[in-house]
Amino acid sequence: MLKTDKSLEEMSKQQVVNYLNETVKPEEGVIPAYLLGDQKVYDIEHEKVFLKTWVFVGHESEVPNKGDFLTRELAGYSLIITRDGEGEIRAFYNMCTHRGMKLCRADKGNKSLFTCPYHGFNFKNTGELVGVPLQKDIYGSTLDRSEMGLHKVKLDSYKGLLFGTWNEDAEPLEEFLGDIKWYLDILVGRAEMEVIGVPQRFVVNSNWKVGSDNFVGDSYHTMVTHGSIAKLGMVPNATYSKRGFQIHMDNGHGLNLGTPNPDFAFPAELKDEFKSNLSEEQYEVLSNLKNMIGNVFPNLSFLISHTKIKDQFISNTSIRMWRPIGHNKMEVIAWMLVEKNASQDWKDRSRDSFILTFSPSGIFEQDDTEVFTDITEAAQGPMPFLKNLTYNYTMGLHRDPVDFIGPGIAYDDKFTEASQRNFYKYWLELMTK
Amino acid sequence: MNVEKMLLKCEFEQWLYDEAQLLDDIEFDDWFDLMHSSLRYQMPVRINKEGVERPDYSTEMFTFNDDIELLRLRVDRLKTDYAWAEIPPSRTRRFVSNVRVKDFVEGEKAVIKSYLLIYRSRSTDIQHDLISGERNDEFIFEEGKWKLAKRIFIVDQTTINTRNLAIFV
Image 1 (cartoon, rainbow over the protein chains, first blue to last red):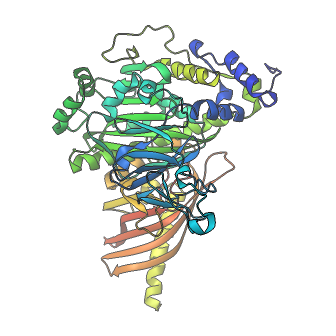
Image 2 (image 1 turned 120 degrees about the horizontal axis):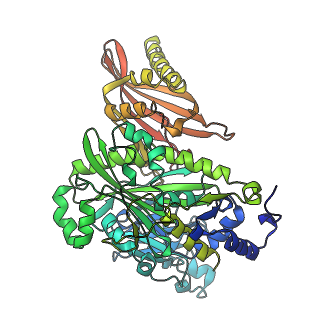
Image 3 (image 1 turned 90 degrees about the horizontal axis):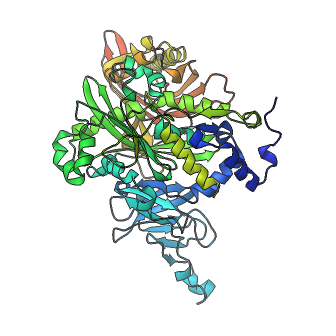
């Protein structure tokens, strides 16, 4: 028997929004499966989430020199990110203002002038239109170049993390990040950090929310999905992932802190640098950190992983974006970061531990993508909607938060779904606004 | 090309075909035995650069960067009951072509370039993944056999269109 006689297909946008309000109940731990499988939900998400919030676009260390540039995407639209002659980082829509051609097709490089392949209009890396072929001859004095600069994109950074937004009315980045900043300090503000090489990129046939959900609060899967790691002796035992704290905060952000750790997971010679960049409380967390897994709403996940490889403990720090391509497809873009002042040996070992664990060949990563793909497949089409199939997110509903040294609402182990409920709560808020 | 060179090319073609067969047949232990203890097994991340700027791949970031010990770990992992990424194992078909001998010292070493196209099918999926690229292999002759000492696989996509690299290249 079908549970509903409605069909998402036939609903207007407003009806879909109303229906989300009726059926998505994060606070009760009820999340319907159709959220991961429906094109209409995806389209509303694009408009109400990705065009409204701050979305990660890169790290400052990817454009270290004047004239460096990157191309990135922001909610499906191509950006050029430049460091201009004054050292300022800017972002522009990668579209010529004359006829709309994509100005730049390289991933990265260094140049101060971008020339359109269509009519040769050229723009400085400050966005200014500086050259129009045969301008005097064909336009006389009628073309005002100052009106035709590249479309600026609102860009801001926090501890080297660059975020962009298409929303002119977006709250300031620091406000949007709120309490998660305290933890981002530990992640990328503990020392001067740099991206190693270029990000890894691969495609997974998964809805993007499965990735965010997994990183924001799902330490529970580690025992089984990543069971092979314990078997290989890279982590102490299968239940190590329970120990620590799960924390969430406003705007859907959240994380899991694995503690304690008898082995200092970071380059010991940089302790002074860490101390000078962190508060005493933050340094205490860093000192005891086994791992840190979290998500900045909507789709920027981060990770400090600490494993034993070749009988040596080594941590690696990475951030990753679940870039939506369709309701059942995403590009995973994973950046690996390391302390700039660490020894070359530490950097190399840290990089190789990242490649072995969380790159596309990574032995953690592989098993996650298998799960993500099958979950997404199971949610597709009208059946999960018609039968009102839901997921159970009630783990830890009976528990009370504890006092924690850092901000946010914290639980004293990682096996709860509070962070995921909080993620969907904010998601629903944006979707129904 | 003289007969000697043809035979040489043939010898390494056969090595690569045999290797492909072992990987496609999921005989990872036998495949691992083809590796030299000094192995470096790399797959750099590809980058889109302007014009003909080279190299158009990262010299710092890799999708694989294994030595013999890490490769052993991967092979061992696939034998645990928890290697979900390959349960059931992917059906793969490796097509090796354009084999060229770049350097050769009898009974010592060889440098071989080849093209590789991997067809990958997962479980009941009706769509498939294709991974294409160029291999730059270095061999060392040891105990009467050619062992792979270095492989650099230059993949043709900047965004890899397969869910993971639980398979070897």
